[in-house]
Image (cartoon, rainbow, N blue to C red; front, side, top):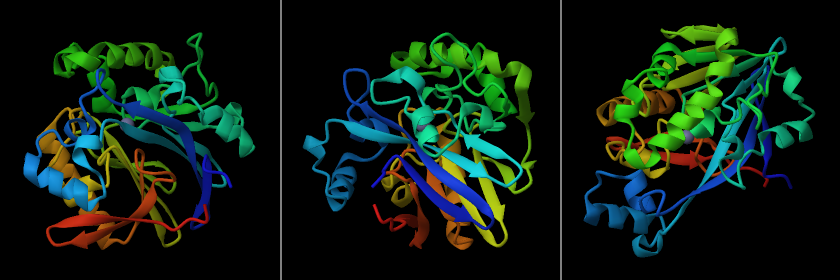
Length: 294
Ligand SMILES: [Zn+2]
């Protein structure tokens, strides 16, 4: 049994969901989980929904979130989506070791796609000395995202209690990739079979990906949703969603698309391996995790 990596196929592409570990979100650094994840939810309804999910609201004192990166081997390219959190906490930064168990060395990765600039997605870009972890890779990011983290605006838009950590991560992990960076400013193919999809809201240039081969596709939605309850209540945004109204629009667009196209979906923060289907339920949706042998 190995709950750190999970292999699956999309057409001819070999994909691997790779855990970077987990991170515990709890006071005093973060608000209690219910407020952190569903900041604008009406209390009574929230409590009812939580109980439907077997969560006792008063006893939910910490959110232990998985961090799930993705490897796509297309035959010509070996692509990594997001680099995890690095040394954010003792339980993160497992990416390299888990890649190794799959026989993948950092030099083997030729493309690194960063869905957005939060610490848990760019933290593995560099090592403790600031050197690039994937030295031979081309890096890809949405232009608005790169511009945001390199602007004065970032400091103003970020919540005070996380501002320094977020900016610190961006300062350490973004400048070293600049000479190997390609910026994307529209929905286009990054590589054959890997398409960038605009998914702004969680951050200004948050990016989703459509990975397709033959008649199969994977929608990698990253942090469009952070918790399965977000599918049922797409209007409940999280404290870390920078542009809440846009999050709601993006969710409706991507979840609707995933349901209609019956796509396999990967959500970065969902229970490992983070893979499942999105099923329409009334005006909203429901998460249906894939069955794994684990
Ligand atoms: Zn995240």
